[in-house]
Length: 108
Image (cartoon, rainbow, N blue to C red; front, top):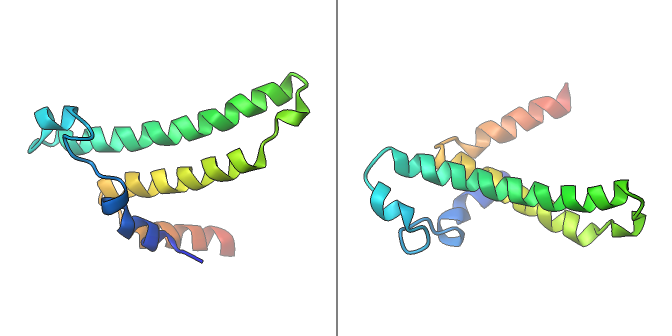
């Protein structure tokens, strides 16, 4: 099994945030707005994953129960965790703080 810290640590190589991948960063580099952009972009990826699940659920709400796609849900939830860790990394939030919060939630 993996932990959040492991996800956090591989993100710089798996999710490259540079002007070649994100042209806006060429203009924003060396400004505080570069991190703002990276945070927002991680959030947009998170919203995109949740939107995929919402689209599926909307079909189910209208009677298409067969629209439930477990593989899609697993992929979207996994990507959502990765996107949350990217948001934390860009925000300079230690993943251990998140793990501690989750641990406290579980033990209450």
